[in-house]
Length: 451
Image (tube, rainbow, N blue to C red; front, side):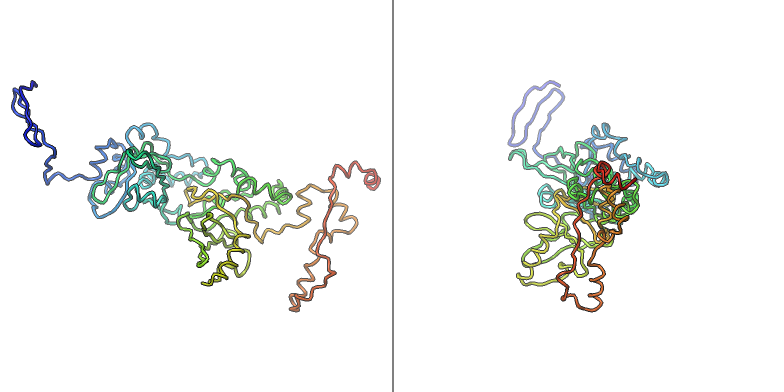
């Protein structure tokens, strides 16, 4: 086309050509019959593979505009991202720990549907909203989470003022400067798809600090039981927490010891709570409020979750009447309660590790040693592998030093109601200096005894 002349009339540019006249206007007139739906916008954003997957999964009504009253946020990967990653994330690798029955139950279409629902967030969220509410609930909810919705973690980064804020979802970057808003639907365009949350072990093994916790689950034969538990919160201890147990860990990690395996199983289950609790559900503990979310663990213990300006904590209830069950508005009571909490609480260093069955929080240090794990001197000797010393105690009828000398006396006083009049000369316990088996074998007197 050859332009013959042009002139500007106000806001309108008129172009004269040999075929006629072209008018350029600042605003386009859109006919009433032209209505944009989320699906049309997704096609325009080059997310046609995402649209096709939604329809194949039977979820077309989320994007076709037939439910304009429903407020949603859609996280849509581009076609390029889908082409690079597909085949991959819908089958997230968890089949290596699924039984054949479970693999049949989760058909490819089921995995497609789960994956698609995980990219739909209930409610509309702007970037400012995500900065205030980084944990958002998706439409994916089922038996794995006991009917509670799965969560996506949004992270908002303050970029250069001219560029605005940058947001990512579970590490997948949004590539739009601003999200597209179509009525009650907000759309973010992702640089890569998000995989659905993994199973417990698959998530924990990504963190080397949790390797002993994973190993302890395997040694105690609790992996299958815990991973099949729907809707849980796992308080995961780090390696140093187990190492700090010293001889106790030497006993608990004994291979082939049935008592040690049973005790280790009780210890592991004390770290698994029977409902998912994300960090945004943990209440604030202040001088005027002793609020705490109390959740039962698999071993029967109760654990209280609370936060302060110093962070989030787990308080372990080891008594019949835990202090966090006693409410009082008086600051003096709250101060006493705070001192109890400080001495009995475990700090959460890494919250909200997303799981297929709920969530995990990493403990900064320490672990829960429940009351139903009874550590005796005899068990510690087994942990030390001090077999000769234990044999000598039995030979010389000294095994009473391995028992609590106050046990029978305490029971008698409790039955008489006379706990206060304890004999000051009562033996409180014994300290044992235990030579190794090697040192015994090198001792001439022992060798003479064994002849």
